[in-house]
Each structure stands twice: as C-alpha cells, then as structure tokens.
Length: 408
Image 1 (cartoon, one colour):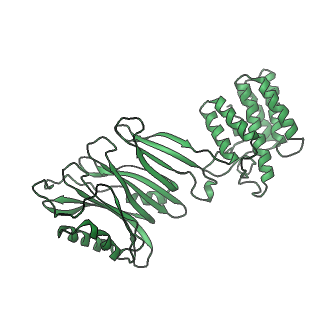
Image 2 (cartoon, rainbow, N blue to C red):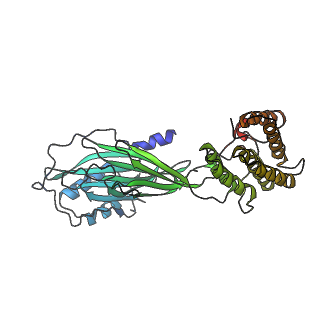
Image 3 (tube, one colour):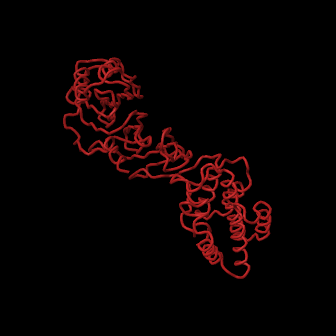
C-alpha cells in the first residue's frame, strides 16, 4: 500500500488556500479567450520533454497575453512527450469567473513518464495566477472527465481519472474542488485497470453518484480477478459506498464466491442457487488452487464441484429440506467414488448429516466436520495449499479448516 500512499500526492491537497480577497469580478475580467469550453478537451500527445515549471510559466504568460485556448496544446507539445492530459475552463468556486484546470503527465528529459500534475489557475485582479498544484509518481494518465456539482454545494467539482502503473495498474477516480475555504480532494477510490468511470443520478435526488467499473485484480498475488461495479454517493458529509456488485463470471471459483457472499449475508436460498450452479454446470471454467498443480484442471473440477455439493448438503438442512439433502448425497455417491478426488467431501457430507440426525445443531455438526478435516485432511482440502483453499486475494479463500463448513 506504500505505493498507493505515494500516489495520493497527486490528489491530496496538502496546502490550504484562503479564498482570495482580490478574486476578479465581472468588472475585472481576465484576458479574452477565443474559446471557453465547459467540457474537458483532451490535450493530444506531444513530442518532446522538458521542465514542468517552465511549462507553467509559459502557460501563465501565454494566457495573460490573451492567448486563445487553441494554442494550449501546441504549447504543451513543445515540452512534453506522450502527454495524456486535459484542460477545462469553468467557474469552479462560484465567483462568477472561470478558473482553468489543467491536468497532464510530466515526462522528464530521458523520456520516462515520472509524475502527473493537476494545476488550477484563478483569475485575480484581471490576471491569471496559479493557485494549486500537486504531483504523483509513476503516473501515465491524468484526465479531467467532467465538472459537475456532485456534493450540492452550488458549483462544480472536478472528476479526475489518473492511472498509476507499477507492479500493477490502478485506475483512480478523485473528486476535487473548492469547499468554500480551500481546494481539496473530497474523495478518491480505485479499481484495477482498465476502469470505466462515470457519474449518474440514479435515484433522482439531483446529486450524481460516482460509478466506477473495473476489476478487483491487479497482479499475480491477487489471482484471477473479475469485473465489478462500485457506486459511491454523497451523504452530506462524505462519499460512501452505496453498492458493490460483481459481474457474472465464467469461472467456477467466482460462482463459489457469489455463493459465499450470499451465505455471509444470510441469504441461504440465493447461496443454494449459486452452489447448485457451481456443482452442476460443466461449462464453467476451472482455476486450480494456487497450492495445487496448476495444470491439473480435472482435479480442480472434481474438488470444486464436490465442495459445492457439500455446501448444498449443509444448506438444504438449514432451510429444512432433508429430501433435497438426500438427493445431493446420492448425486455425490455417483460422481465421487471412494478414493477419488472429491470423495473426501462426500465423506464429510455424510458425517454432517449423521450428526444432525443424531440431534446435533448445525454448528455442532460443523465442529465435528472440522475435527475430521484436522485429523484426516489437515492440508489437502483447505488452507494455503488445499484444493479449495486459496485462489489469490481477489477471490474467496478457505484458509482455516473450520472455513469448509458454513456454520460456526
């Protein structure tokens, strides 16, 4: 997470700026501009590299001499290679004059992209002055996506998308603006690349939510990722996560993940539907546990479907359908003959049913199952090297033997 903290230098506004007493009014206009877009326009890639401070000085001089917006991108081209940025003219603090927000990636003289910058210029006493700047390391994109009033303050905030590339690729979304006293970062979140970021008023409250769609996987340690969509909304004081929804996946471990999430939420009927799909749909694709032979997809299929069937046995008893439990047991007897991959879960399922029929609670039956795993299968079923133990930190995991059974 250290690299993420470094990156927050791009969006963390550490310097507070008092609202300037000399803010320009309609009678103290800044030099005229040929075009004044209220939607971001992208600065095309440049060809050279140079010094960021020189660029800022040239932009200020150019604007204060009345240079039109159309000349900004050749100016950046003079100094930067592979620049991926944007520029926006809009009133961002409610002072009835237009600020200039400029984002770009700084490329050093060796041709390496080293940081991104967001610069805000304010019109003060008929002249543009730089009022904010911030940098972040290892960034290859910094784009202003939109300028909307996302917090109901009466003037817009910038929605900035910036991409960090290192051992992984992270797409960040930040809401940046004036809070009445200073420029600040109201919110930052990220998903792994590529992410799609947008705003949407889904509930008709006239405040747009921030919606980001990406993946929960960034490198080999996290395993096979999947797409998800997160929605954040302003609650009057901060942005809060309103929903996080995984997209459908063709991988069996992700169906197991959906089932586990349903179990965690106490929605056992929904969990049963997911486990039934994981147990029976052959078209789903296998990913072996990281602790197993990555080439043994047959064993991965056997263990993952057997585990799904075991969970079905426990959950059908939870919803008081012992007839369905017996049906799953019979299916397992056919699919997992003795001493074959997956037959261990048949043995555990039968033990669970036997305990419940003898009067044990579901939690007590799970304790007996855990003791059986500890005695006979301490490493092979669950845990870091187990067959259904670990598929990377982005996915569901069963690290302790007690995790195999759902009731604790």
